[in-house]
Length: 70
Image (cartoon, rainbow, N blue to C red):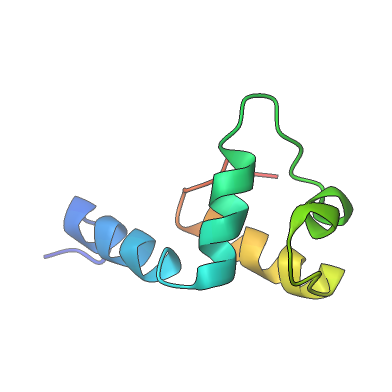
């Protein structure tokens, strides 16, 4: 089985969805025409994580193809 198989991709996506902050980001960005700007997301997240933390989680979500590329 290839590392790039559908099963492997789903496993990576499931792992990415296992983090609470990434789930919140996905919920916010799933709204139509929603900005992926980390500063905008920070204002809407209840914990107000650092922008660098949001940028990291956006990168993870993009790498597993849960968000469009930058």
